[in-house]
Amino acid sequence: MYDAPSYAPPSEPAYRTMTLDDVVVKGFMVLGALVVAAGAAWYLKVSIPVAVGAALVALVLGLIASFKQSTNPALILGYAVFEGVFLGAISSVMESYFPGIVLQAVIGTMMAFAGVLAVHTLRIIRVTPKLVRYVIAASVAALGLILVNLVASFFVSGGLGLRTDSLLGWGFSALMILLGCFFLLLDFDAIEQGVKQGAPAKFAWQAVFGLTLSLVWIYLEVLRLLSFFQGDD
Image 1 (cartoon, one colour):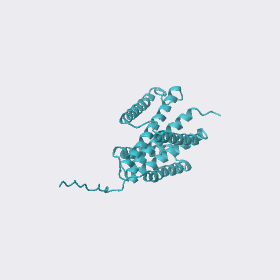
Image 2 (cartoon, one colour):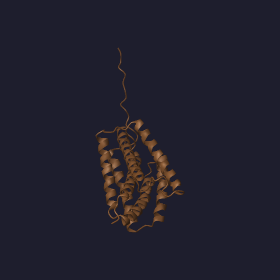
Image 3 (cartoon, one colour):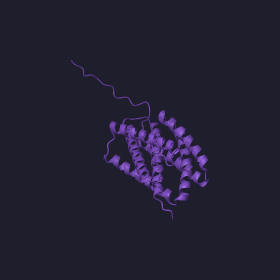
Image 4 (cartoon, helix red, strand yellow):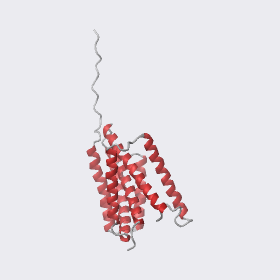
């Protein structure tokens, strides 16, 4: 008599898998640390040299977290704090020149977040390997142009004009905001896939780090674009 093969039930993973709640909780922690640090820097009127130093530290921590795909909470929270100091100081300076611009930039960033989330939820744009390659290639090209523009500005006022109050500057800032939104779309997809595929719970830290990077990118570009259209009165 033929005995049907018996299969052992799938074993449970040796770790707790990531849930959407993990991402939300850690998102509040990281973004909360960033906002508190920004508020403190604004209130204490942190100087621009100190803000630049904080930005450099945030850059180093961010690069480490990105290339190592780190899920270390201290590293990611440290990035959020130093980035927050930079954002708070820069926002304070921009607000002194253009009253109301920071609130407008925050609202614009929130609208971008909500819009991209809706696009992802409704599957208006699907994240495919080809789209990921295009977004990464576009970001490398954009950063390359920014670097060339910076070098050119040492020899010609305004460099290539990518960051000036001009039609070219407006268009480049708009493209940078759009690129930031595409990165946000990739972040949402990474979170969804992580939950579906049973990624370790600690992966939520890396997911939130990616979201934070994209939101900071969008906020700074919205702030810059808005500054071009502020009146002198």
